[in-house]
Image (cartoon, rainbow, N blue to C red; front, side, top):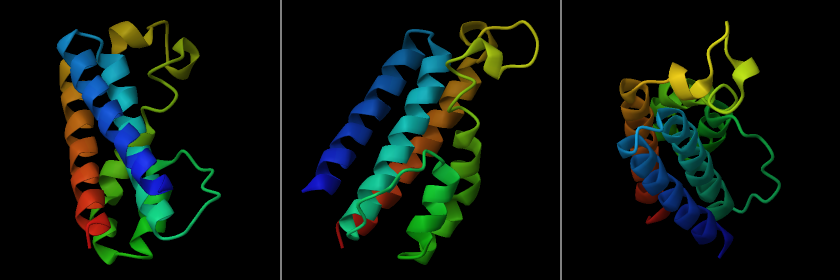
Length: 130
Protein backbone atom coordinates (compact mmCIF):
# COMPACT_ATOMS: atom_id res chain seq x y z
CA UNK A 1 0.00 0.00 0.00
CA UNK A 2 1.38 3.33 -1.11
CA UNK A 3 0.54 5.14 2.11
CA UNK A 4 2.66 2.70 4.13
CA UNK A 5 5.67 3.33 1.89
CA UNK A 6 5.35 7.08 2.45
CA UNK A 7 4.86 6.66 6.19
CA UNK A 8 7.91 4.41 6.52
CA UNK A 9 10.03 6.95 4.65
CA UNK A 10 8.68 9.74 6.86
CA UNK A 11 9.80 7.78 9.92
CA UNK A 12 13.26 7.31 8.41
CA UNK A 13 13.49 11.02 7.57
CA UNK A 14 12.63 11.87 11.17
CA UNK A 15 15.30 9.45 12.39
CA UNK A 16 17.79 11.13 10.04
CA UNK A 17 16.79 14.55 11.39
CA UNK A 18 17.51 13.37 14.92
CA UNK A 19 20.88 11.95 13.84
CA UNK A 20 21.78 15.14 11.97
CA UNK A 21 20.94 17.25 14.99
CA UNK A 22 23.09 15.09 17.26
CA UNK A 23 25.96 15.50 14.77
CA UNK A 24 25.56 19.29 14.76
CA UNK A 25 24.17 19.46 11.22
CA UNK A 26 21.24 21.61 12.23
CA UNK A 27 20.34 22.81 8.74
CA UNK A 28 19.90 19.19 7.63
CA UNK A 29 17.92 18.35 10.75
CA UNK A 30 15.52 21.18 9.93
CA UNK A 31 15.18 20.11 6.29
CA UNK A 32 14.78 16.43 7.16
CA UNK A 33 12.09 17.36 9.69
CA UNK A 34 10.20 19.23 6.98
CA UNK A 35 10.57 16.19 4.72
CA UNK A 36 9.34 13.83 7.44
CA UNK A 37 6.25 15.96 7.99
CA UNK A 38 5.59 16.35 4.26
CA UNK A 39 5.82 12.61 3.62
CA UNK A 40 3.70 11.73 6.65
CA UNK A 41 0.95 14.11 5.54
CA UNK A 42 1.13 12.69 2.02
CA UNK A 43 0.84 9.19 3.50
CA UNK A 44 -2.42 10.21 5.15
CA UNK A 45 -3.73 11.64 1.87
CA UNK A 46 -2.70 8.47 0.03
CA UNK A 47 -4.67 6.50 2.62
CA UNK A 48 -7.72 8.54 1.57
CA UNK A 49 -7.28 7.56 -2.07
CA UNK A 50 -5.50 10.63 -3.41
CA UNK A 51 -2.72 10.00 -5.90
CA UNK A 52 -1.42 13.16 -7.59
CA UNK A 53 -0.11 15.04 -4.55
CA UNK A 54 2.36 17.52 -5.99
CA UNK A 55 2.78 20.23 -3.36
CA UNK A 56 5.74 20.34 -0.98
CA UNK A 57 4.07 22.83 1.35
CA UNK A 58 3.42 21.25 4.73
CA UNK A 59 0.93 24.04 5.46
CA UNK A 60 -1.06 23.22 2.33
CA UNK A 61 -0.87 19.50 3.09
CA UNK A 62 -2.21 20.13 6.61
CA UNK A 63 -5.13 22.02 5.06
CA UNK A 64 -5.75 19.14 2.65
CA UNK A 65 -5.67 16.61 5.50
CA UNK A 66 -8.06 18.73 7.58
CA UNK A 67 -10.72 18.18 4.90
CA UNK A 68 -10.80 14.55 6.05
CA UNK A 69 -10.05 14.97 9.78
CA UNK A 70 -10.71 18.39 11.29
CA UNK A 71 -8.10 17.84 14.05
CA UNK A 72 -5.38 18.34 11.45
CA UNK A 73 -6.24 22.06 11.47
CA UNK A 74 -4.56 22.18 14.91
CA UNK A 75 -1.25 21.56 13.08
CA UNK A 76 -1.50 24.59 10.82
CA UNK A 77 1.11 26.66 12.67
CA UNK A 78 3.57 23.74 12.70
CA UNK A 79 3.03 23.12 8.99
CA UNK A 80 3.53 26.80 8.22
CA UNK A 81 6.70 26.93 10.33
CA UNK A 82 8.21 23.87 8.62
CA UNK A 83 7.60 25.40 5.18
CA UNK A 84 10.29 27.96 6.00
CA UNK A 85 12.93 25.20 6.05
CA UNK A 86 12.30 23.72 2.60
CA UNK A 87 14.65 25.96 0.57
CA UNK A 88 16.76 28.03 2.94
CA UNK A 89 18.30 25.03 4.71
CA UNK A 90 19.87 23.84 1.46
CA UNK A 91 20.76 26.89 -0.60
CA UNK A 92 22.91 29.87 0.45
CA UNK A 93 20.84 32.19 -1.74
CA UNK A 94 17.77 31.17 0.25
CA UNK A 95 19.08 33.25 3.14
CA UNK A 96 19.39 37.01 3.56
CA UNK A 97 22.96 38.27 3.76
CA UNK A 98 26.18 36.35 3.35
CA UNK A 99 25.49 33.46 5.73
CA UNK A 100 25.36 29.81 4.67
CA UNK A 101 22.79 27.32 5.96
CA UNK A 102 25.42 25.29 7.85
CA UNK A 103 26.20 28.33 10.02
CA UNK A 104 22.78 29.94 10.11
CA UNK A 105 20.64 27.28 11.81
CA UNK A 106 20.96 26.45 15.49
CA UNK A 107 20.37 23.51 17.77
CA UNK A 108 17.19 25.26 18.94
CA UNK A 109 15.94 25.50 15.36
CA UNK A 110 16.58 21.79 14.83
CA UNK A 111 14.93 20.84 18.10
CA UNK A 112 11.82 22.85 17.25
CA UNK A 113 11.58 21.37 13.75
CA UNK A 114 12.01 17.84 15.08
CA UNK A 115 9.27 18.36 17.67
CA UNK A 116 6.90 19.70 14.98
CA UNK A 117 7.62 16.71 12.74
CA UNK A 118 7.12 14.31 15.65
CA UNK A 119 3.72 15.87 16.39
CA UNK A 120 2.66 15.63 12.76
CA UNK A 121 3.78 12.00 12.53
CA UNK A 122 1.91 11.11 15.73
CA UNK A 123 -1.24 12.73 14.39
CA UNK A 124 -0.97 11.01 11.02
CA UNK A 125 -0.44 7.61 12.67
CA UNK A 126 -3.41 8.18 14.96
CA UNK A 127 -5.76 8.81 12.06
CA UNK A 128 -4.29 6.18 9.76
CA UNK A 129 -4.84 3.52 12.43
CA UNK A 130 -8.60 4.22 12.55
